[in-house]
Length: 184
Image 1: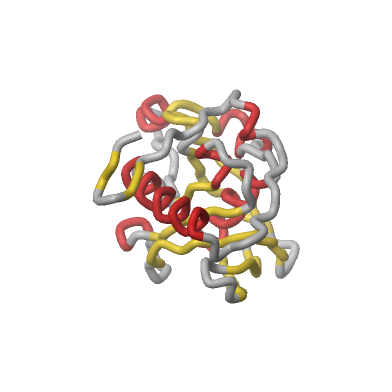
Image 2 (image 1 turned 60 degrees about the horizontal axis):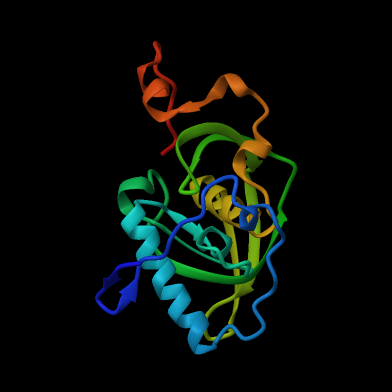
C-alpha cells in the first residue's frame, strides 16, 4: 500500500476472493476515526484506479459502506457528484421500470457487461457524521449506487447479467462492428 498525501492506497480484492461474496456487517459507529480514515483511503483508491465507486468489501473489509462520485466527464446529462460516503445503505425502487446499461468493476478488471437495474430509486443511509442521507437517483447515479450496494450483499454484476452476448473484455467489445453503445 502506497502513501499519498497522508492517505493509503488500498489493495482491491478481485473476483474469486471470498470477501466479495459474503454479506457485509453494519458499521456500528459511522463517526469513528478508523471509519473516517477508511473512507478517505477508499476515495483515494477509487480515484487512483479510475473508478466511480468502491465498496468496503472490495478493499477486504466486510463493512456496509461505500464511496462514489460522478465526475463531470462521466456525468452525461446529470449533475456531477463530489465524492460521497454512504454508510449502512438501503435501496428502495420507486417503480417497476428496469433499464439496461453497461457496467464494469474494479474487482473484475478488463471486463464489462450490460446489466439490468432499477431505473428510479431512493437510497438511504448515513454519512460520516451519522447524519441521515436520503437521495432519489436515476440514470448513471442510480446505477452506481445499486452496483455498490450489491457489493455489500455479496453480489457481483455478472450475477445479474441476463444476456451473455453483451459481456466481454473491454478491448474486444470496442472492436465490435457496429460498435456497442456505451453508457460510460
